[in-house]
Image (cartoon, rainbow, N blue to C red):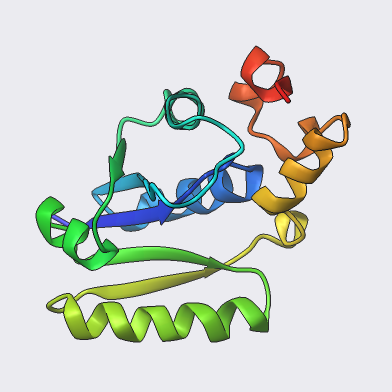
Length: 158
């Protein structure tokens, strides 16, 4: 079985994240959208809110499993029997960073392969950071958010 993990903080999930997962689905038997939990990091949305956004976004996708993890990504992949990590690339800066992480994961994760997908040009400027800044400023971030979570009360909280 070909299992891939798409790790991230998803604070919040964007249309760009959703697009990457949906484009990866034909390539794998299962895609685990895994929300990393880092107790030393300050998040805009609570863990339960972020998890619910992921569940709502992929409720219609039976090959997607939503989960959380708090260990190194390579170790999590091993626990889940995944041999692939999915990462999105928006630009060359993303590549430089992600390539370094991919090499580390390949070193510590037996035969763990990182699968890079180029961002859809329509979503290449999307990032959770941009969405958070829009929300903090009282703006409408609906353009950047998956349809399944648009208009939910959690998205408008300060």
